[in-house]
Image 1 (cartoon, rainbow, N blue to C red):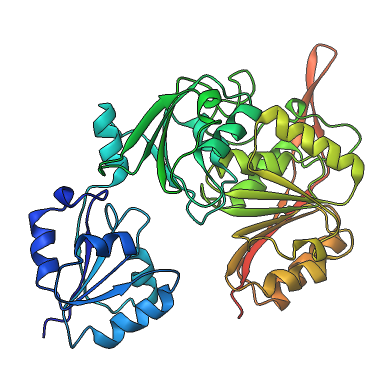
Image 2: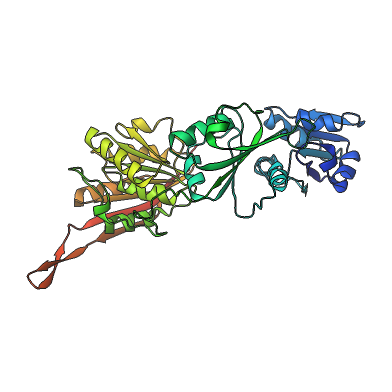
Length: 412
């Protein structure tokens, strides 16, 4: 028995969009697995049919148990590689021998209908996912394609766009694509926010030019925003040169989840937010004055993926998504507790700590070492800034800052 499991894309819905190769394989199968809508296409086929609802773990077990006995085909809406079951099965059973048969995704179908190319589009799904950085994605891309679902309806998304002042967008919504009752509507956010669409719809949002940040603020790909660009008040701030090194030590990715503990003015949070455009940043701060400044700087730089968490770490971290990276700019005397919390995370976490005093630096190093940190690194950064004195220039030293970094966590 050939124990390959076939994962087959069956297109946007209508049977005529199923490729001949996919159809041939499905009709030879002993078992077909898929959503109710997908199985209906092959309702007359004489084979065992296993519906997928919310029972993915049971489905994975069933496939594992039967793969050596029967020919199994898993039917995926659209293309298997586009927010489908493919990645789940690979994670759950990495030893499965898979064969993937591509299909036409509903977003390809919609773009073809509208005669719009999609090679330069940002594609995301809100089906069962949060939409924390959706506004940033739309601002940063000329075309954004969204698989909607759950509470994230086209109308609800458009209301969010309007609240952010994004009214000059062209939005196309496609529902029940390829079916006889297919509907495609193009309009403005104001028009669509009052309309109802099927739960699983596709949105194509075309943005002619609004960016996450005005060009006059910070239009560069590098970090290191000048100190004077931040709204500062009397709250301590991680200075530009220190911030630049600290952020580089975080080793951020565009989808990283970042904690900035002791966020102060929010300068590190903002820098991270502008880098992690597909991720999330949590600015943790207990002081009310600082909270107000963080909010002002978030709004000034348009870093909408930064969320303020008021209170003391580690208690206020409970319930947040686990971090990929943690920056500790101020611990409030709770360094040991914070590092113990990071150590308890289920995955490896990159930690960067800035310390001004020798005692704080020692506490950070010892805490990382006690937590089994790997790749530990200690840097003492001394910065001098030039200033004019009469007709000449004098270098004026800032306080040296220790930057301690490493990785720990990954405990279950």
